Image (cartoon, rainbow, N blue to C red; front, side, top):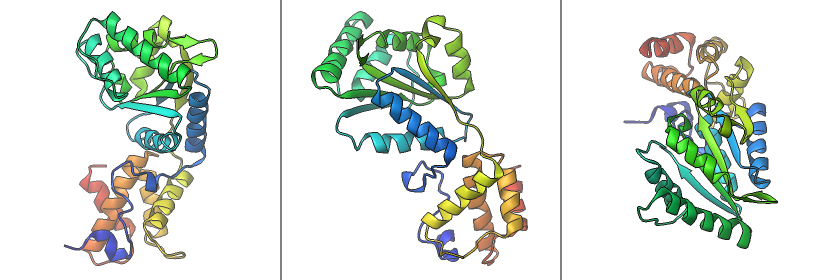
Length: 272
């Protein structure tokens, strides 16, 4: 079966629901967010919290930042995708694992000491920068948040030994604010807001161009484009999903243009 995007003369699927850096559109707000993150890492400032509701682009921002950081040999990057752990010991072992350490199950005090030694050797003796990225950070247990606070105690006069980037939903802010001994450790709060209609349109154009759309060629009619950007509510994930379904609907109907009725069919299919 022919892939729907080839029907429109495209080389790649422009609206695949993955955080592919090839399709990362660095608009004004996202560029500022990534630049700020790169800056706090470079300065080893400790804890940064990135907040956004589902679909606002946290995963895409994280992936783009990681691609940039991994190009620097001085950066040692570890990432935890799901921070749901039953005990503090499990969490500390996972922190070591993402940095390539094989820590045997021991007391939390022994694990923290092992991590502290590793952080000191890497950040001070090797003069490298350690970055721990935690996705879905709103799922951290109270023990996990407390463990992070203690890990932030490890520093030398010039810098923190470990940089922690927490990507999470708004619930994370409430939980951190409830812990007075942790909220004071937050160096930066970065909030991802929904896109306005102009920015949503720019995302569409960028993705289509990256997928091989010829200059001057149009796939969405102005009415379809307006309906699509408005219906997305400024959420990049919803925008790409609806654009994908609308193009698929148009291709199924043998239409070389995506019209507003195709978008409406996509909206109906998702109950929007």
